Length: 138
Image (cartoon, rainbow, N blue to C red; front, top):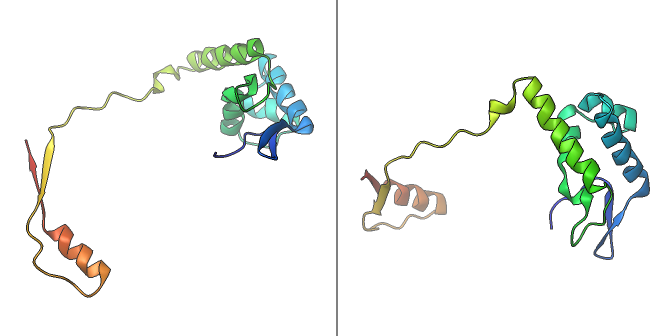
């Protein structure tokens, strides 16, 4: 398992709520939904962070509970925060920042010529083998 989200700690392999952090998280959601900016909402909640991290905290789905993490934030509050994030992004003209579709490229075939030499060092062998690779765009 990766990083443990803010507001939880792991005890004996089980996620448990960190009460101090949970109070700060709930205050973050409350502050943001009452109109404060991401950074100000976090600061008022006692979380010293940047706006990007505050946004990630607001978007962490684990807070509404799942098979491993207990519920910290009510689902309605969580969904209201998501709606507010979109509303503010739209007001600032930032909804067009979605990843653009990748341009389809022609497939490439890679072939390698016969390996006829064996170098002393692994780096030398790798360099030699890479030099044998040929590519062809179809």
